[in-house]
Length: 98
Image (tube, rainbow, N blue to C red; front, side, top):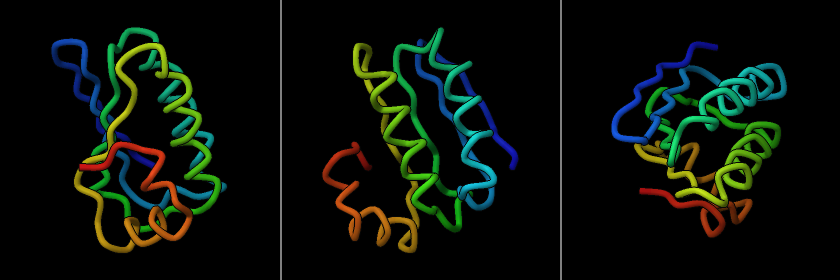
């Protein structure tokens, strides 16, 4: 999995490309762990994500918990397929989505 990373004014935007599933979720976890150390908040640009599994949802929830004492996380540019999964699992009620 590829990740674009942009850092600006304490906000780190992580842009994963591809599927977030049991194979790639550990890679996302590593990126989040590394980037969260210096970020005031994390933004996930989901425009390059075509599918997310329960493992990917767990990674997002872990990221949100990791950033809880800071400004949290936000998902942007979520496509309708990924949004449907977030809605079906009620993660859309747990995470900030724009």
